[in-house]
Amino acid sequence: MQARMTIEDIDKEFFFHPFTHVREHERVGPLTIVEGHGSTLTDTRGRAYLDAMAGLWCVNIGYGNAEMAETLRDQTERLAYYHTFASMGNEPVARLAQRLIAMAPGSMSKVFFGNSGSDANDTQVKLVWYYNNVLGRPEKKKIISRDRGYHGVTVMSGSLCGLPNMHAGFDLPLPMVHFVRAPHRLWEAEPGQSEEEFVQGLADELERLILAEGPDTVAAFIAEPVQAAGGVIVPPKSYFPAIQEVLRKYDVLLIADEVVCGFGRLGQNFGSEVFGMTPDLITVAKGITSAYIPLSACLVSESVWDVIASGSDKYGVFSHGYTYSAHPLAAAAAMTNLDIIERDGLIPQAKARGERLAERLRAEFGDHPLVGEVRGDGLLGAVEFVRSTDPLTAFDPALKVAPAVVRRSRELGVISRALPAADTIAFSPPFVVTEAEIDEMAAVARRALDDVAAELRLLP
Ligand code: PMP
Image (tube, rainbow, N blue to C red; front, side):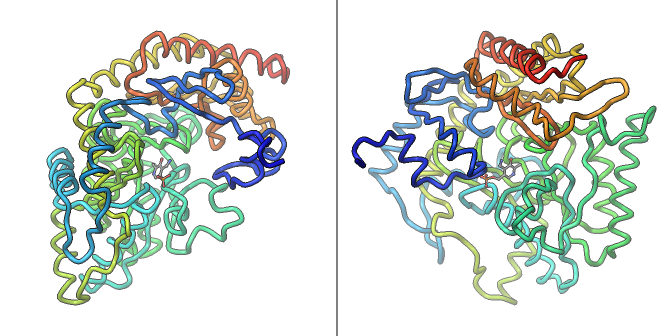
């Protein structure tokens, strides 16, 4: 009996899927992917899909890269694993740390390695707490995050998410996490408000929160340069400078979560450079290896490092780290991934393809009556659906318009992603995507919207 089970049957029987509706999965089963090359995935039936999301915003150099395979094989043969506790080292990781510090904006000093964006953001909070303990400020521990932010799924990084679905059923967020509004002009700006007034309002809101909580209790502010999973929310250029003025005034550290934006997606190495951020701590993951193998890192600025280093006088050994921290295979993969990005000019290419994506999305959706906004930055694009643009009215979330468009789009051979927090579909293709593939992604998404609009009778 067991022998006759399809891979889909086995999946349904045994595999506990992340971020999946359990009952729906029991009904419809998985889409099982067997191969990937460039921007194209193939399923068990041999059906091809264009991956407009680079997996989960991460396979930046595209699928099936032979140089990555070679690096992973060579490093496996030389040294597949050794730990880095108690001063043990390995060559790929030392070289990668040096390279990340050379690339990073501001005055970064040290790199701590983990395995996922979630554990890295967890580490960031521990670093911030440790920092304030070393400084003799045990009360300064609260973290401010933003509505629509996505920072991971561990108890702390899940708490940092400004997305209600990430908290429901899990007794989150932890009480030391507080939230301010996202810089999403479409919904958050008052009618007629200028960009300057909008930004000032957000900075004032942050200041009011810090004062209400007590500046001596607020330790850090965490932010993605562009909020990805929360709806591809691109802040006004003046936003982070205004926010940082408040943070500096109250001695609050800035953690830049560059898990999606880092390593070129916005057309520069880091989103912080694009948006004028001077973070004290930077979180990276995903694009650091283009997801060929898990790796994340916390970049620590000189001023934070100086305090943490002096912590050994007070606490002895820095007792934090994972079995797989600074894994040599992951570090070797990251080095080759960064070599490929540099050598093949993939960051300028991402920028150019991003311009094409923006142009095609505007052409397909710009004046569509069910589209509230087409937005993006670099090779990140998004289309937000609304019941009406005048006056601006959201769809009833129960209609699940964005998920329906994504489902239809997949039937038509393009995998995009629904971001339910904003009734938005997102595009974040590999940097190696071709112009023709971008055109296809946008055209299919438009056809999918029209099909869904007809099926659900969304148009008057
Ligand atoms: N931060 C951001 C900005 C992310 O987009 C993600 C993942 N989508 C994470 C953190 C968490 O990373 P991981 O899934 O690797 O834990």
